[in-house]
Length: 265
Image (cartoon, rainbow, N blue to C red):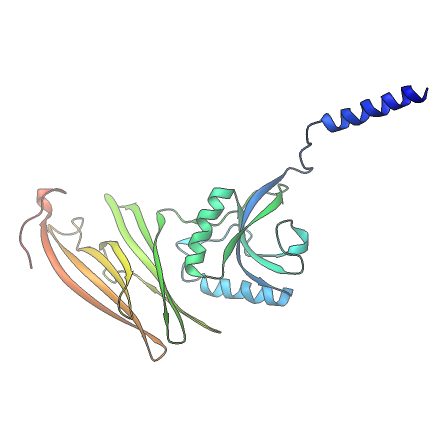
């Protein structure tokens, strides 16, 4: 009898060990959370929510947080986050999508980041996203007296009228220890077509290189193509902007897209 019981126990143990690992209950999946910031207390986290709402006004027509975000999440409540901290999430995404959109927000705010979490799929994922027609362009930053000067560009391509329209927008931010001064830079000409060709650091300044067509062939029989370089620097704690614009050529619109006159300014 003892031998029989021993065999039964052995077989039962083997059967339990041989079973495949069961999935986690509640459809739990590894996802990527985009985090704007946070703190040890809910009050600290709320200050990050407020800062996001203030600063996101600059990029509201370009990129947005997931529906229902920003949201404060207690790190104790979600595996993958640090217990004892409160996190300001901008959305929860599939892994590849989350890592990509996190780079956009890191270009706008260096303290933002992504974190892999175990997410129970009781609600649909809500990932931050670029708005239709917009794409993430280039970004750069440099240390300046009293802080960091950051520049992030977004390119727009969309159909407006009979042809595609191309333009861009840049978020320029001076990050100080306890403050952020930001502004939106974009082509000042109406009905212009423009594209960023480069964004780089110069000697004590950020340089944005642009090719501009104004007016477009939609409105005039002849258009002019310019190169323009924007210079951004910080002097006495304030951002200083300068433009250098040069005529490259004139285009005879009657000759079509591929035909440009050799007339130079």
